[in-house]
Image 1 (tube, rainbow, N blue to C red):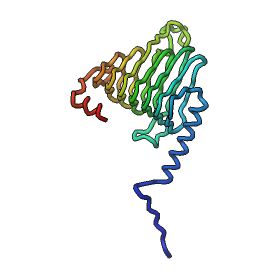
Image 2: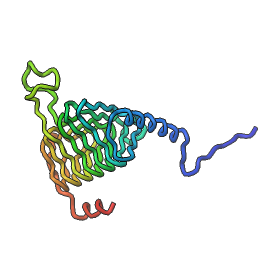
Image 3: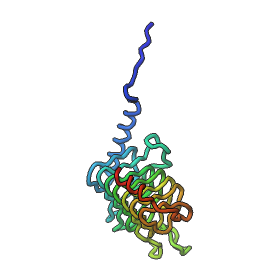
Image 4: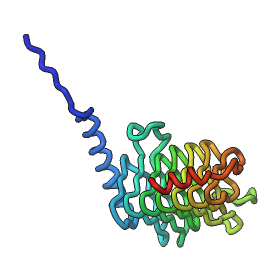
Length: 215
């Protein structure tokens, strides 16, 4: 009795390939039906959670990658990518070639992520405290005393897994945020920062910056 052996050249796995195609279709259908504005191709692997508040906007640049399925990224994800605006006029602006793995981005006013930036697994970015400090007004997101400040992430920033970036923070171009950081103050360009609360550890060297710009 002959045994037929199937060999896949160059490591090609048809089951994995089919799985990617299926989850990309789910992602595309969600993006197309969500009311998100797109400037070009978006690679959504798995179905993201998208909630665009009436009168607000979410805009994605070209070649944005959003991974909502654990099999498609090394560390896996705790939940799908979440893109959510909370109030009229709120904006989420994600520039070209940004990568997001299971991240939560929630805006009451403005969150902006610059070109080429990468968010590691399960990063959270929020420009709001969500709830009032006043005990009797903590249910809901509409109390005028709730703290809200823009969050601006520069170009080519890397944010490590499970980090949290809170309201009013600006992260400069090329900065690196270590895994598990809680960022409550702005981080300058070309810096490596980490911790809770997040602090600058050192600046990127000229050689590191030169190599980054060559990539």
